[in-house]
Image (cartoon, rainbow, N blue to C red; front, side):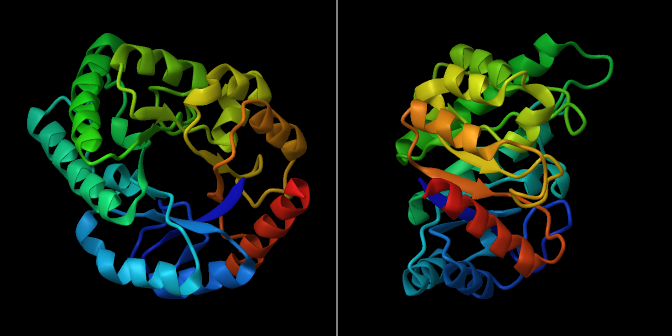
Length: 270
């Protein structure tokens, strides 16, 4: 397994759960010096970055870019797939398509987290799901034309009220029926929503496309009570060998958090 670190541009809002919020080249240099294999890039829109410049920086520091994450499209852009306003939904889809094209240039996957939206007050879950499936199918088909994989991330009930657990994500994927869409477990959210983190990972099996790690308090692994040894054993049992990426709070400070995460995870993997 390879280890990644979530980063964001220097103007990203605090709603981007990243350790390094800085010039991307600076963050990449730090991540490489600490021994990370890759960086996940949290973006609001595709025009925030120049793909050629990003490629050069990745090559310079010997890093990969496995995933572009899209939480800011929801939190800052106020765009999501279940919105009652069709115009907002269309804008959300177009924003995601732009990020998918960027991902194709950077040979990355695209995360679909809170941008999926939620069940609005006074509306049914069925209505929300119908809107989500329509938007998601369009994005998945567009992504397939570029050879890009999408990753549906369950998020806990305190942040959103739709697709909270891995089981719920798997149920939606069965309805979506798009082979280029997989589930993206995040053990921080799983600790709240899933009865068993290893059990849910094994239930997802080959549909696990990418994994976020943070401890029970969203600090770096090792600062809370999650059993990462058992989590890694479960990932090995399903033959998962791609990225586990730290999406953590910058505590006690950004550099210490990033260093603790890589050291703790490297020791467990060894």
